[in-house]
Length: 292
DNA sequence: CCCCAGTCCTGCGGGC
DNA sequence: TGCCCGCAGGACTGGG
Image: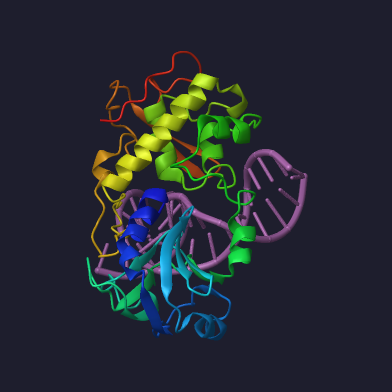
């Protein structure tokens, strides 16, 4: 589930590792299939041990640690991965442990950085700066959803016949939006999820852009969404709070908080979509995006 | 190129 | 009480 707000919360949580040096990396004993690590563990270890962490970043739904060598160490949590500074939820799903030294003492001086992943769909990749550009440049990964403009949105998706809900999940078009926030964003924008991209008006692209920025910024403020399975945590193993603010996600059968209509669930490209059938209109009036 | 179905993975909850 | 199966959705692959 981690989407942009959760990954950005993780990044902010581990930002205090900047200035630290990586003393060692270990793979804790794990009875399960190991997560994907590239390059192979031994080579990755040789390239990162002894390196100072210069800064943190985010590439779509990946946390990036930039090393003094210029290499980028990427953590991609996919569904159930966590980047942590403290003890993980369970020992058995702990996949990597980086031991750190030096670095800042405020707000805290982390001694280790952990990668934990229950389902193990996530991965850890080390890329040179050049390889990073090739893999995550604007050709491969769209503009970040926090920054994208209405013009960029329209330029990248305006000719597509896809439904807007499906297109929002395309990381090449816009980076960072997943199934949960696509539903929330479209509800705030007042746009029906089945609206085809090439039928969207300029005003709708503007409403979509405003809703995207507003919903994601609000979700970051709440430190992301921890769903019923309780998996998602920030770097200090604390739950997010945005799940209590969801307008439509996982709320099929309940009343729309804006108009009182019934929230529906439909499946598009094998993913659940939640929306209000009354105030998210396929055509007609565009509602003003309102985020409290 | 564009688009979509299938795939991986684990834990949970519904049905029986 | 236990078993089975469907579902959750990140990103990638292959095929139409």
